[in-house]
Length: 114
Length: 112
Image (cartoon, rainbow over all chains, first blue to last red; front, top):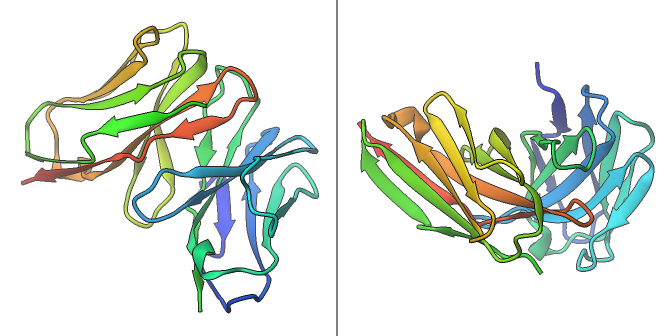
């Protein structure tokens, strides 16, 4: 019954080796978000898509990019991961951006950097 | 810039207690406020969403209130159970680009 699915749950990559995290949704929601959450900290928004319109947060590092090839899928690409990029990455969706729209989260992908 | 604060960072109570978690925010121009639960190593589960025009929402043993003018929300948990042990996060959605700002969470432990 999972509606926001993140794969894999755990990802290990080497320092500097590109990695891609994936998110899919069965809700047909217009908006998809990527958050980074470090241990015991608040989730921090990296970027979001409103349909095909990409919105990057001002303080998102340049080596973080995203793709949304269709409504259902969204990818997070980290071009050259550093040790500081080890974190839980959370994908979320909402039907629209407005006041009445809750966000629905996946279970996250925990990224480790060797 | 919106700032969201949750106090205390951690709370431990015996089973059966009623408790209140606090969330405060600095910019009252919000669309909504959402309370989430996060279990260790997991994603976020939505508990309650309060729109800016509302004052409270209830779901089972949970009641969330919103006082937008003072920048405060509370999550009331009645008759706490060990299964309620988790980190509780509040997120405030701004009235501009729809960005949500999260607090750092309150980690609740309910002891049997």
